[in-house]
Image 1: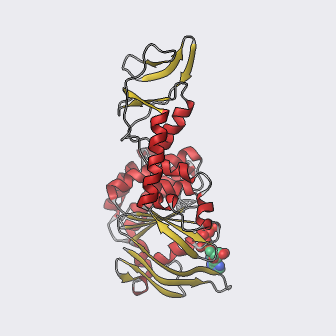
Image 2: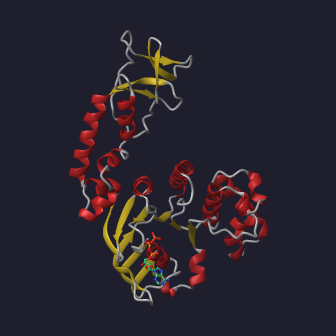
Image 3: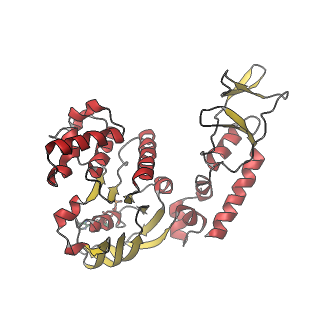
Length: 344
Ligand SMILES: Nc1ncnc2c1ncn2[C@@H]1O[C@H](COP(=O)(O)OP(=O)(O)OP(=O)(O)O)[C@@H](O)[C@H]1O
């Protein structure tokens, strides 16, 4: 869908921001560009919609050289989300989202109807439509930014640190929402971040850049974590990359046993059979029940906190389905590692 062919960008001051980049980004996937500050991520992103022109080389979108297309038209056909949401301060939220459809000549009524629909899609209450951007929280503004980028239903979405300015809880929420939106929409997304955890969470593929605009490795998260190409990538992934790998595997395949009865610790359930705590006489310890969709990393964490080493497993309604032991989780974790290394 997006191809960089020997692309080089040198700014007039003499900085080489992107060095001989050759990279194919497949359609319908999320490619995350990561790397330390100044390594050329934003420049790479902006060459896709011609906000920056390459010094040499070619960028193709859907097989067409971007230089052969009118820059304004190209930008309207590609969604763009940035960190500070980039909303027009003197336009209402609804009019912000309707901007591109209006530019494309949709007509006011249709553009606004589409905008209202999108605000709902990104989880904003209807009353926010009439407000101005400064009357929203940072997280809400980012949602408006995403809605605006999606307004004309572009096949490609460029996202430059879109969740960088919000607190970790809102950030996780926005990431979850993007993942579920993407499941539905299947856009080709190029996403820039500093945050390797965000990259692992969102990316179908992760491209790691090093200062000077060099692409070092581009691979699916599991492959990157299991087999970093060199010491630079390994250090960028961090000392806990083995644990990060476990965040990519779910609990679904792990066997369950019935919850223990008659021992010192028992699992307390509410009347609907939802686990509430571990109890030993007067002593209780909180329980964090896990679903099949939770990760092996969450299971390992919970098994360490659990006084029995057992993890309580529940169905989608939170009802107990069984327990899994710390030992079982560790064995599976070890096997997940070996598998990732061999597959890579
Ligand atoms: N318009 C410009 N003129 C001159 N130099 C520029 C310009 N834009 C970026 N640069 C330089 O190019 C290099 C790459 O910048 P870029 O913004 O692409 O990096 P980045 O990886 O996105 O960084 P960050 O994570 O800090 O946003 C940096 O050294 C930067 O100073």
